Amino acid sequence: MKVDFVNKVKQLVALMNENDLAEIEVQEKATKIRIRKADSTVVVEASPGKTEELERESVKLLDAKEPDPIDYVEITAPMVGTFYRSSSPGADAFVNIGDNIDVDTVVCIVEAMKIMNEVKSGIEGKIVEVLVKDSEPVEYGKPIFRVKQG
Image 1: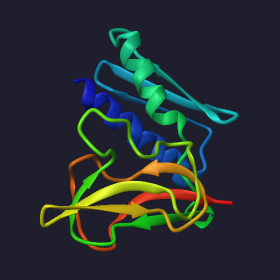
Image 2: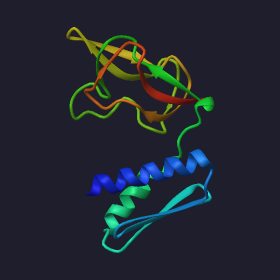
Image 3: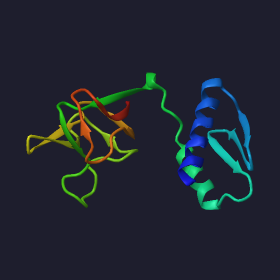
Image 4: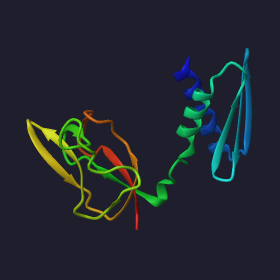
């Protein structure tokens, strides 16, 4: 139930962004969802019966505006392997969203054939999105981070 609601809200926000809409309201059976944009935030209102926790979670997911691909570059996987955000389980991630990086910043590790390969950013900017989950397999050239240069 919770995941379905969040996915529905994400779909509606995507529809709003594609069509440059300021507000949208949908009713399916007993569930009514109204989403409106106010400045740079997204407000989600759901019909009675939805918990506040669910609404807060949805708003948190939608607060981050989809990045404009023209303004951003991607750091890609340099090889086939397994992506790790930190040097060991439980350790802090090398980089997080909002971190400033330079060309020599280590952003992750890609394990290939039992060898841990540090991946450097190769660019300067700010991390705006992590595109791969920790311990997920990656292919050569797969985007793993999105960075706003500058």
